[in-house]
Length: 150
Figure 1 (spheres, rainbow, N blue to C red):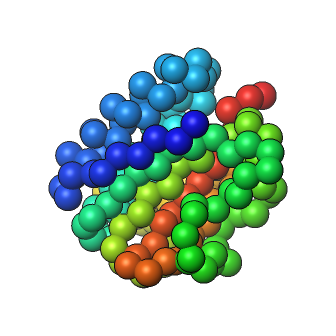
Figure 2: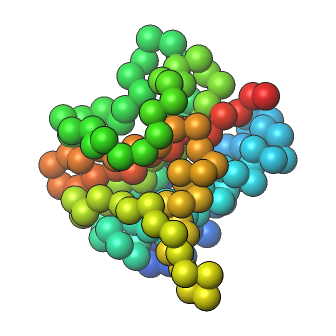
């Protein structure tokens, strides 16, 4: 399974992405706990792309299967950021990837408790099974994999 959505270039993109992610989770009959993680991390990745990345932005949703590549296709170079806890190629993970036109890499940082933002990549790091960045001509893709089965 692979779905893609071209995102609006404004903050309504997060709502647009949540709508598609919600439908996808229903179709896959994911538990409520997994659905909440998918919606949260998808919203965070999309918001980061719109605020920090630049248009055009695109959301991809896929389920890696045995024998398939775990990275987004393309000629990009995988960066050494993020967790690398296994390939997730057994169909028990949902992969979210958000592409934008910036090559600036994301930063996981501790947010000031009084700040209204700055927690997105910290949440992706904490709640995903794996995540990383793929730099490609014209920008980058930030991806994460979420475990769908207990």
